[in-house]
Length: 228
Image 1 (spheres, rainbow, N blue to C red):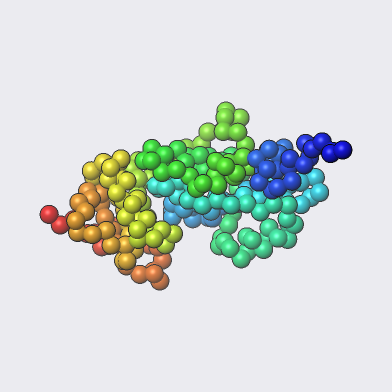
Image 2: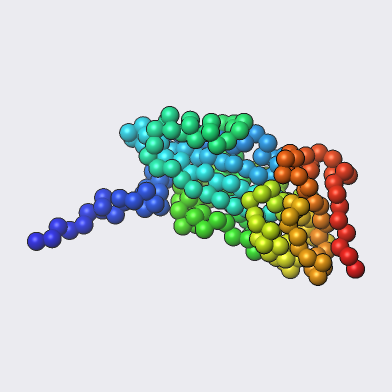
């Protein structure tokens, strides 16, 4: 005679646990890179604690200037030592912050990006959004500045291929509209002379250059004019 499946068996995978049970775990710690406002890229780690004192965490890479949640993944039921290793080996200058702040950054990035047709990473809605608290009035609303002067500013800091960079700029031209966006490209991101993009264009010319320096002195950027 076959045994009936128990509710516990339904939660055997980390993904199912996160989808159905993660919110029952208390928030333990939250971290973010200290330059997130300056760079426009937020590396966010949210950690919850199990009754065993083991930890699960989700990581979110949020582009608050254009693309929203670019990447997200999780680590399930690991030790505090493992969390420290992840922080020390993969991230620089991380600050411990409140959950309310990182929650607001994630959803502000998602909402801003979706205005221009950019969806979060595929794992966000399917898995890692379930790690977050409900996005309702229980979370104090904080003002998060997205884009630049309210307009999208796409920056290829090395995460996108030239083909993907081209696709993003095409989408901004179509949805944001002529002259209503900016984009920063790497030197190998050739869009083609046949493209008549009207956004303000900058080229970031060296893999070794500090990408954040583009924000320090905008007047010194190499501004490219589209050919007539």
